[in-house]
Length: 107
Image (cartoon, rainbow, N blue to C red; front, side, top):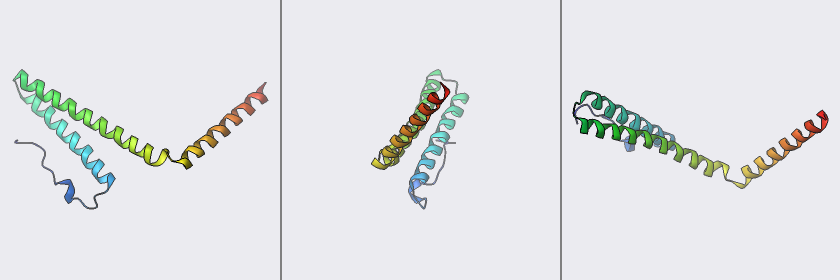
């Protein structure tokens, strides 16, 4: 397609770490969405306009889904460990004791 985004294959990017892949995927989603929106503005056929609008919306959904997957991965990788669970329980318990002490001191 003339005017479509031209990019280097992601597997040729070094180092190929998680952040690189995430950033590349995010960039691809944004560039592709912008392309669909630009072509949609230039076309006069209503069916094609609808199709391009639907494709642009799907790119928005992909970007949101990728973000959710990243957050889920981070939570499972770092937050759902016995140490962090115990840390947050102790911190929450300490905060509750502190608040109770403040409330007792106020009354």
